[in-house]
Length: 434
Picture 1 (tube, rainbow, N blue to C red):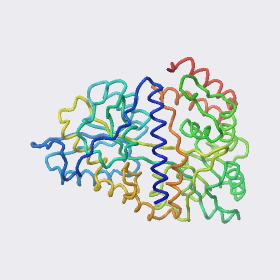
Picture 2: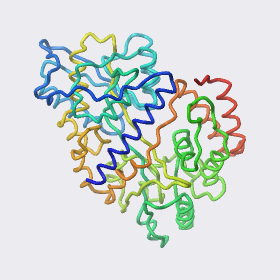
Picture 3: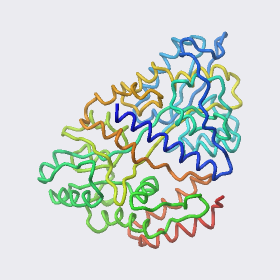
Picture 4: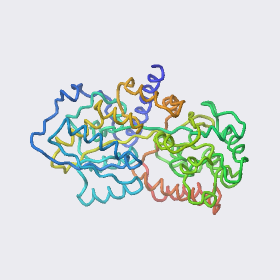
């Protein structure tokens, strides 16, 4: 229970951060609790009297949970036989491009999924319908507030997840080094990675993608940030950020504890880990099922190491309604059931697919009993160190610019200092902050 209370406290901190971000954009976040309602089976929301079909589009099930989502749909339709839900799943890499095109062209589905990074841009541009009369009493209020703009609910939180350090116990045993602990720092990671790298030419110590999505977190571990506190200026090329970026890049170009593109031979980080050739991989809790099915060695997890402080990702996805839908009551019924019902949460937990954003954390206790990993408690411990992505309206442009410069640095075409200087200058030239 202590750990679960810690989770609630951490999520409350996230709410404060999000409220601050909203204020910085000239917007106010309504932190008042929602009106309490009855359980879904006694729902006060409008009933759908005539058979209707609604279309729901998502990306999060594309990683192997299409069947899980279909189970949710089937369970929902038993409770709401007059509502047929047609599901479309699009891979993450194509999803937001397609959705942007559909919204602009007036062909968006009745409802769809957004991540927290893109939600604000859609809501601020008036592309989402306000969600009212939804069954939200079982949802965590902090998660609900993350998807409010000017006090209005434009999205319902479907799930949240975070990142931990996963390690191959067999390779640690062969290298005769102690397993990672929650107290490890990046220096400990480097030492262990070097020992594992010495086991063979085709064995590597760690693979941490050198991308924007990793950088915004790693710089926080070294006391840095990509924006100043009130998001009025870029701080991409700060000394702290340069130090953090060098750690990532030099693992490839100097110590070579992480494979180069040539050494990877077209293999991805997950594939290399499952092949038994990779000692450590910082990745999301959504990897658990895949690694359980495909790893023929023992593995476990710990809280992701930091440097001057710990920091790890917080991911949250929401579901939203198209303001042009012809069936708003049916959409609200589906989105409410999907996000807040016990039946939906049970299906999600059984599949090990993210975590439902429920108010009662006791409902997640069964999650700790699933193995591997044995140290599943590290998932909840990690929530003490969450950092949010630095969301701005031109988030995609910022991440693309920084990502391109990182790619040039890790290929050896430019230095880390040059990469971050160029990213700083380009972002300042192309992006207007508040």
